[in-house]
Length: 128
Image 1 (spheres, rainbow, N blue to C red):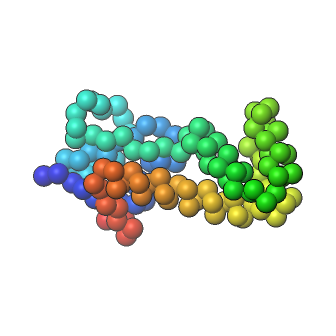
Image 2 (image 1 turned 90 degrees about the vertical axis):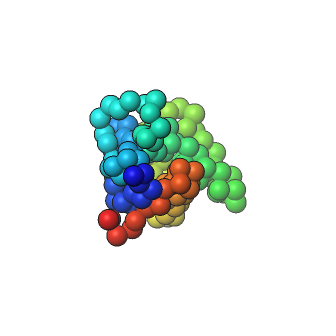
């Protein structure tokens, strides 16, 4: 029997774990050990790794079009690979940290929703 449901908490946890994880269509379970990648029963889950998080920071910065001075300041952080904490400190000082965190969470939700949609999988918010 093919499973097409995943518990949202499992999907969310796996995406934030940093290690590769797969959804097993036959059992409906999330697997975090190596699997036979060539088998269609396994689908790799999305991950919010450093690259994905950086893409979200850049997209958020682009959304600040009414603040070119701030975009330039943040651009300096990106250009010199300075720590993420510096990015968040600037946003905190500009009273935009809450807005950034909301943007990031909405972006993560969108990625997870798109993954489910592309793979014909529904997620259960009640965890079952």
